[in-house]
Length: 226
Image (cartoon, rainbow, N blue to C red; front, side, top):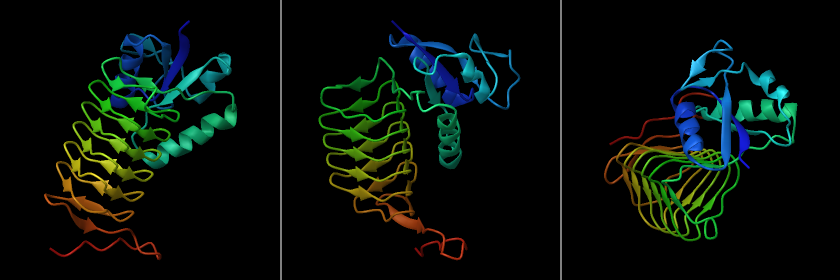
């Protein structure tokens, strides 16, 4: 029996997730919720049901919710808001049927999206609420934290360890046994051959730090010198 699924957010990510869920066999997408779109609107032939309060029409024990928000802080706040309604609501993993994921060898938390063409190999461990986008690769023994965004075509090689809330740009490559600290950003097409400190932005081949975290007084972090 397919479980009912609501997608929060009907922007680009939300439409992609709804499409992936509809071509799969586990979920029946009943519609979108979006606080900024008029209830009754149609998106991809699915109704916009209203804001978060629309979930109260459904049995919390049966309903799944996917939060399709790209902004990490906003995503965090929305999940807390939804959980405040009912801790019985679930955040299922949405895995496109064209992704390669052996669930006997891969550990997944909750609320993850694995897009078409993504490949997750042996003993990969993934936390919660990650976006693993089109044609990305997570090789053997990769560890991924929570709320990371692995963009299209990115490659995490064997035994990489990626902290929470990391963004890996499209086409970037992280070499084997490399650690990427929490909150870091790896630029599009970067080749990362050494550890990335938490909160830093790296770009280029080989990747180098171009921005460091904000100072304790809230001032903007220094850009690294060439």
